[in-house]
Amino acid sequence: MLVHLLVHLIAYICFIGIAIIEFQTLHIENYLETNKKSFIRSNFRKFYNIYLKLRFAFIRSIHLITRPKLGKGPAILQGTLAGEIDSLVVYPIKSATKGLRVKEWEINEHGLKYDRQFAFSRYDEKEGCYVTVTLKECPKLIRLSIDKFDEVNKCFELSYFDVITKQKEIVTIPCEFDDEFVLKYSSRGLTEKPFLLWATVFDCYVLDKFLTPGFLETFDMPKDTVLLCSKNGKPCTCGSPEKIKKRRRTFFQDYYPLMICSIESFNKIKEMHPKTCLTDLT
Image (cartoon, one colour):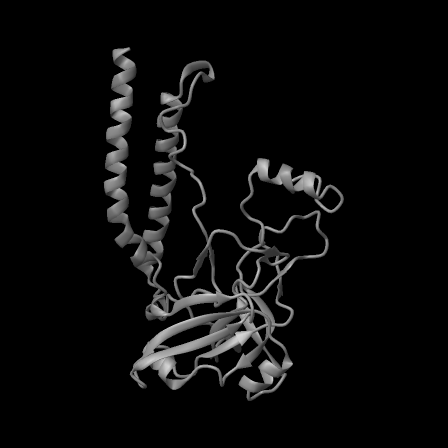
């Protein structure tokens, strides 16, 4: 009994130590996640990844040690590595703003509906195509606020304090765009241009008349930054099940729409849609 209590005490002390280390590693991760590349940063990232693996192995070993024998009762660490989803976050523009927190949201073949259908971008002479402009390059974009989602007019209302006009400005991002919208904000008409995202190139409309000079200056964005949208998106290969021959398509999302799903949730979906659902998680 005394040994069991001692093990539990050591486990709790270890977790307090890990919590303190986690607080300190926030600065390290901020350093590693910057877009500036260097020899020191690249090699430090390798050692940091090793540290993360060792940390996980340590936590896992404590979990196994403190787990009650023969599976009777919950382990003291059960639930500390997981939890309940408090809210979903929808981003109308890729990697910009804090996102819109919601309790429920409609999903489609792309994932969360209306999520990341637009992106800030600029033309890269070296790549020969457009590339993303995100919070990494322009951290002030976190101040771009999403005030509301207008279900009636199907649009997102964003706001910011413009440094030129010295007043609050409203930006309306449509949930669904048409040719008329593209023609209004693009000097190139309906001509699509190549855009590079995670080694995948796909065609996008260049809305070079959408962002105002005040918007760009407010968020310290490059003067040639534009807004992009895509009609067909890109084929999604990373995380895509091999059994699905026809690749899913996403817009400015990074990976396959369904990357996190519990067995219980998947079985429930199979019960609701037995004819259209895959027979297994692959």
